[in-house]
Image (tube, rainbow, N blue to C red; front, side, top):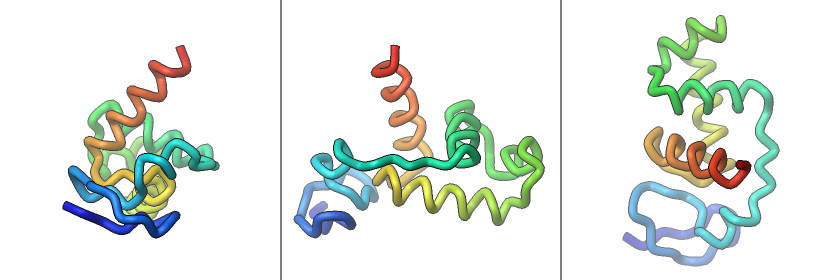
Length: 94
């Protein structure tokens, strides 16, 4: 499926519902907040929004807002893509 990149406007082939092309994804200034990083870590551990909310003492709605921001910043379209991104990030950091 062809999509239009949210950042640069170029068309790119997307396997899922990604909003950012691979070229932009490499150059993204992640600028993730501390809370967004906490949410990513919990998603990576296969936690549901309800479980994330309980663990971080926030509402499920707030978790959804954080997820929306994370998806936009990273150019991912699903929790699975986010978890894969997190695993790859850990591998690159090691």
